[in-house]
Length: 301
Image 1 (cartoon, helix red, strand yellow):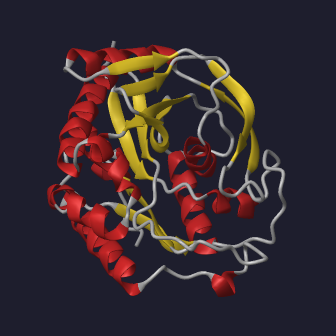
Image 2: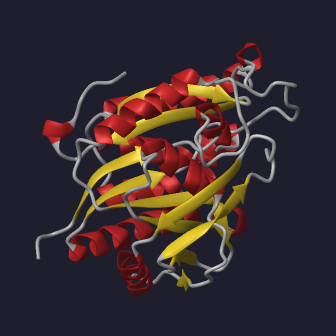
């Protein structure tokens, strides 16, 4: 069996607004569009993925929160309706997805062998979180590849950002070991925004782009500082400033998704491909990709 590998890692923000604006058949509400910069960036990333041979998407989401260890999906298929708890008016999505249970179990075991607390999630009635659904829909709207979702252990809240970083890096390395042993080609997905201060009221028409802007200039400056490190291929420096970035911007990086992905990819020293940046309800959202094979890389933004 050939050695498995990570063929792409993506920072894939999951505001449900982008699915709402797409008007897919799976989502019940109907929109007049909106957030085009972000959606068009996702379209380009989706087209790129069509040129890359891969077997499964592995998603780390901050909206499946676990308080005792890291959990992995362990049921072959999930079919249900996902309703966003904050925005049920725009996201009521009927999903039907396949899970690569074999690789999920292998990652769970590798992480446990590395000393992390892990558990397989075997409940067939479990509702897959909207973060997973949004990111996967925008990257692969055909849903023709199996996925794996990994929960976000609340290390930042229980301990500190520094503990979160240590644990997430260890989890990433363990996942890479399992992927290499599996012989499969894998796309990693870190599903979250960057700055996450957001509006507390919604305009009468959610897709009214005249109301959309970043929460404040400070959030924008922090986002750009981190994205600049992405573009320079300085991921060690990006992880070093992560505790302060997270504190200053209330960022979803607190869940550990980006750190996990960088740990799995060995801290890339090549530039990320930036596909788009746009505010959604005041939050900062960046679509970015890290591509290990140099012949598949391109300068996007």
